[in-house]
Image (cartoon, rainbow, N blue to C red; front, side, top):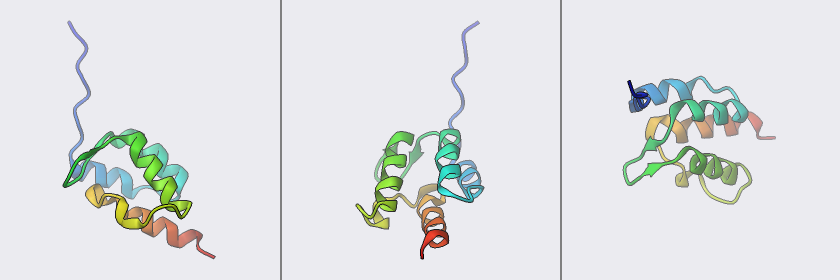
Length: 85
């Protein structure tokens, strides 16, 4: 009896998970639950997504650098609006 690998989540399942985030800390935690996200050009690893989100938050990159897959870009922009002064 071997251990079964966890099943990869569908984009719809990942989007449902991401949609639950109400702040950036929650989003980082929920990304651990989504697993890697398949964008249109590549598969984004969770740690890579966290760096991109942090870089966006720090003003180092624009929002277009964050994948739209699983509703991630939309959620990041939504959360960014809640912290603008």
